[in-house]
Length: 170
Length: 163
Length: 142
Image (cartoon, rainbow over all chains, first blue to last red):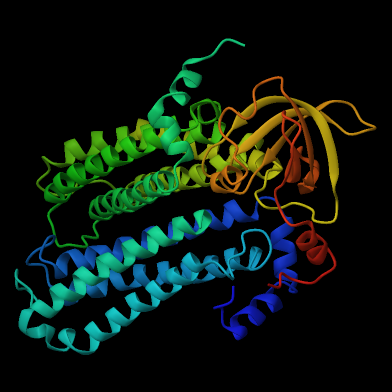
């Protein structure tokens, strides 16, 4: 608790005073119901991103146009991400400081960091290697940069899934 | 009270290790869930291909062959990890209606999916069905696997001994 | 094909029926009342020192009431192991006293504060001051 930033702690305290917190933490079936949608979003998000990563790594859908694949997968990825954001927030609100105590939980914060890194990874890819996708769009063997981004993405998102499950055990 | 087979499974050394260990249980859960993501993704890819939306640009027979392989690889991983998790608390899982529902849905989903996939692996083109029928089948497939996810989340809440 | 569609529809209807039952089912995790405390004395039925939450099922009664089956749910295996507990600590029929916070919704589940094990020793599972502070609207400070 000592190494927790003051601002973060105060935010968590504020959340505990909200109507949303009170309702969600005292209504029995909220948690599993929201968790269900959280998992559905996870399948959409991690599933679609993994497919793209597998293409970048040259493991699956070789020869398929990378840019076309990206266009096809993007709506699913964004839907999944939106669902994760909303359900993740709702889950967090049930007990930032009471019950599950997400606020001081190091694994929870690690999960957020990994998500941020995964996003950063994708942004970097988009503004560098992907800029010249026209040159390697249908190539079976993608540039090294694409392979690096793909590997990192797989590792980071696996880490997010793992951290998510481990929150309850730390 | 007579000890049941579930009690016997619960008393095994490996069950106890998973039940009381610091990392075995969460590790198994992570593997189980990560594999689930790919299982459902593989199911979805074929369903989409069946409905005419090919994500990877594959023919339907190729999509079916890949889906067949990946769903069964993932199912294998889930079956092993799931069994180990089950063993750690066999008596309660065995009597848990949410768990029973989950297994029933998985059985139905894998059976239906496999039957269709094996047929589809031999198709030259997508079958001549109305899009409405295709959509219905895709919808049912979706319902089954969403049902699996839902039932799984409810296992911990279905009987008081789990809380 | 049509038979499978019919099967799917039956499953969907089954899910709808079941979900109605789910909504009626008052089970919850971590949703306990911090203000209320209850003391139960009774006999152990089942002790599960398992992931993710150890559970002690026992027949207990308050001073006033009749005997009912309660479930005490603990935070983690590590938590109870700190008190030196093992799988053998509680056996069916052993005496146990449980002081803790009951769950919402009238379900017979309790989050333990002080547990008296069969050997007579008392174990403090959580900080009661934290409970009181929460109940009074403050939040955990360390």
